[in-house]
Amino acid sequence: MKTGRIAYLGAIHAVSEAQDGRVRLADGRTPGEGEFVWLPPVEPGAIFALGLNYADHARELAFKAPETPLVFLKGPNTLIGHRARTRRPADVAYMHYECELAVVIGKQAKKIAKQDAYDYVAGYTVANDYAIRDYLENYYRPNLRVKNRDGCTPLGPWLVDRADVQNPMNLKLTTRINGKTTQSGTTADMIFDVATLIAYLSSFMTLDPGDVILTGTPEGLADVRPGDVIETEIESIGCLVNEIVDDATFSANSK
Amino acid sequence: MHYGVILNDRRSLAKIGSLDAAPYKGAPRAPVLYIKPPNTLARPGASIELPDGAASVEVAATVGLVIGRAASRLRQADALTHVSELMLACDLSLPHTSYYRPPIREKCFDGSLILGPRGVVADISALTLTTEIDGEKVDRFSLADLIRDPVQLLVDVSEFMTLNAGDVLLVGVLYRAPEARPGQRVVIAAEGLGELAFSIAERAR
Image 1 (cartoon, rainbow over the protein chains, first blue to last red):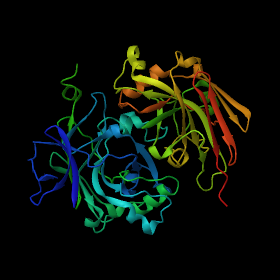
Image 2 (cartoon, rainbow over the protein chains, first blue to last red):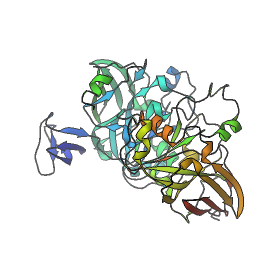
Image 3 (tube, rainbow over the protein chains, first blue to last red):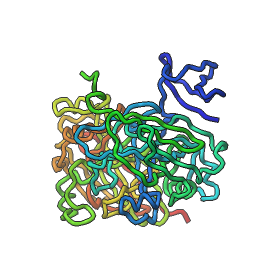
Image 4 (cartoon, chains in turn orange, red):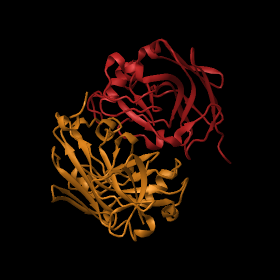
């Protein structure tokens, strides 16, 4: 089953996917694309993200693969839904996408053994964890100015139940800029897999339902420019679409 | 969400020494922020269990700016009008002397942010935070020593991330704050805000 959240006719609704692929409200209505606004499919307490969790990507950034997971946190200000817009500040030289498998926690997890980890997963969604490398500094790196910017983490469109994903560690990831494929990889190449990450984090902190772990991205980063449409897609999970806009477009109605 | 900042006072910068060499390769330009997620929040009087293998914990007295209304791209003139009140807090960290990588295990264990009394104080920079461990005064932290005062901190942080009502921005923690061990009791105090006491739990046997 796929579930999501939308804003439609003045209210926020939990939706599921109808047989024809449309969103279906609990009362049976199925508004068409363009008639509603996609929201992130979950409202997380904690948002974890992984750096350098694919060997090829670590090499791409000239780093040795880490020995323990390189985890950083994000705030709720960063999340936006499917088909939203993300601002690229005018003064930056390099802003890139990161297509990532996002794992949503389903029940409270504390000191969980690796072999039990999947019992604590509600499901999966797609994240695009944009970074602006111009702002990178060597303190608590990647620092929040790079990774915790408003609206720089599209999430969605759907939360796909764990039961519907046969093997989350063997899914194809693809990113396209304006239809052209620029990133292509597989979750099979993760250094620390989903079960390891849940065991690691829950060894020193409690994970709660709704918490999200963005599991890192493979190689194939590229700069994104205003007007670009970025599709981050994960096999069996979904295709998340986002548009890059410049300052003027983003702030068009500002006062 | 609760956010904090390191290296925001002159004493800490002096203590950490030169930042020119690797891995830092220069002093920080933007505020160096960290996040304390919801599992870290604890109440006064709590008995905090340290993660396995931790022999001691740094107890950093600080003050949180409690956001009263959404704060984005603030200007100096009205930044403080987005703060509804101040909150005494104690931020716990497993000792770590390198600030290169995000301190998740060190700073995000359960109960590692104890939230104390709230209040309204006319002049934040006049506050001095005292720390006692088992009745012995171990530190004084004057907020007059901050590099970015609360106004500048709010301006620089809200430039790229919106702080929403209920969010808290901690104004700074000392580099290598005093350490407490299991079984010890900690009391933080600031005139005008009050007192915050908690203890570090004995090891389970």
